[in-house]
Length: 192
Ligand SMILES: Cc1cc2nc3c(=O)[nH]c(=O)nc-3n(C[C@H](O)[C@H](O)[C@H](O)COP(=O)(O)O)c2cc1C
Image 1 (cartoon, rainbow, N blue to C red):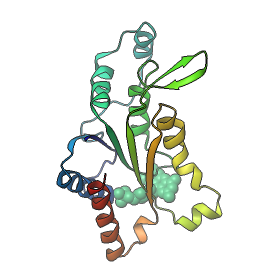
Image 2 (tube, helix red, strand yellow):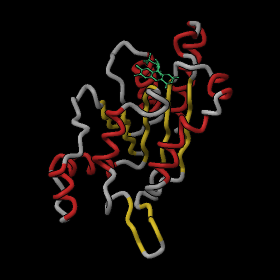
Image 3 (spheres, rainbow, N blue to C red):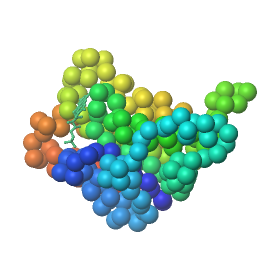
Image 4 (spheres, rainbow, N blue to C red):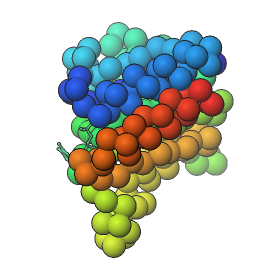
């Protein structure tokens, strides 16, 4: 399988980065072909500009968008790894979606309504959160964590096979709990 990992965290010594390394190792062991988009490392520009929109409206794809879209189209499967920031994805990742998932490539409007065009891909979303699971339950906020990405973005674009894994309370985990999560992520890669 051709797997594109979209990784969004600015620090190399973060837990997210350790998750990235583990999933890569699992995917490699399973024999998948992998490409990694490390958005901060490559200094990705997440801004969809007025000029970009003008070009898109006349069916001209700006070069920077075309480059990203070719990587997306190459992949059978997408894996997103990111920390929860303000109940959502980091702005850098939101910007990647803004730039890449354009009308005509990822979805289109038809007489029957919106049609997702990325039907044959599957996705895994791995999220870390500072809050405890109980906090999100008490505040009726569990859905808020994954709905913007799972439903509002991926499913909207036709990707129905989306699984997500959320790891809570990251800064309060014991070393053993951290290691268990790292092992689980490697297994997710192996079983992908
Ligand atoms: C800008 C910012 C916003 C954050 N917003 C949330 C939030 O809304 N909910 C939450 O549970 N944690 C939030 N956090 C905590 C991070 O999710 C947590 O520190 C991260 O998942 C831990 O992983 P890391 O060590 O790889 O950074 C936020 C952290 C930052 C820096």
